[in-house]
Length: 208
Ligand SMILES: Nc1ncnc2c1ncn2[C@@H]1O[C@H](COP(=O)(O)OP(=O)(O)OP(=O)(O)O)[C@@H](O)[C@H]1O
Image (tube, rainbow, N blue to C red; front, side, top):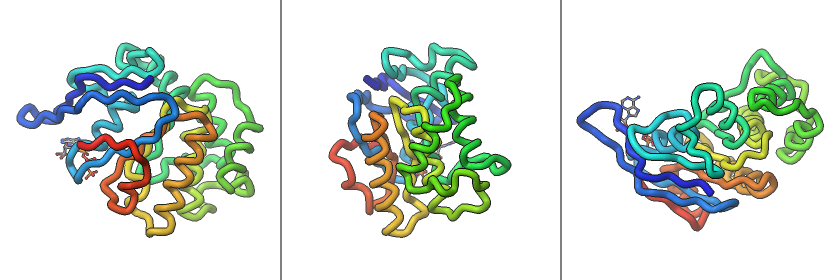
């Protein structure tokens, strides 16, 4: 259902990154493993529709995402791909509720407050709905990032090194939340990491 074929990318002409083909079936949970500098972030950005590869294709639900242009690709990404970056990316001047409503409208979906409440509830942060990001702890902000990524029930939920700055207990909590949220929302999960603590979290592994 998600197919990455013949992908390569280069930042300078003398060093090309090539990626083995990757077929990911619906609802699978994968780890993307590789040492620092091996190309995990590059591949995550390509799979997420954020970085056009030098060659190859990414097909999500039968759509070749790099055949989509400009705003069409942005809307497709908003509807089908939920991305969790290493550090939470949340708009500081908006409340948590407003941050999630805007993620719905960016994807051209109707604003749905009940859906926002449901997602925040499932992540244990419903009480923070009307708070601003500055009023939340780092762990709560990470949950908001997960909420924003799953709000539109994405086909692909993708996280780039989500545990690298966390202590052991919180690293485990985040991996558990990602697995649980991908199940609840019917999303395929890809988590990139070089964190030895999570290298056995899922059976399926793509190794760079
Ligand atoms: N914007 C850029 N310009 C030039 N080279 C880059 C750029 N981004 C990444 N690279 C190079 O491409 C290679 C892959 O980088 P990438 O960030 O994808 O690796 P990574 O596996 O995610 O690393 P890390 O685990 O350290 O985050 C590295 O050699 C890196 O130096």
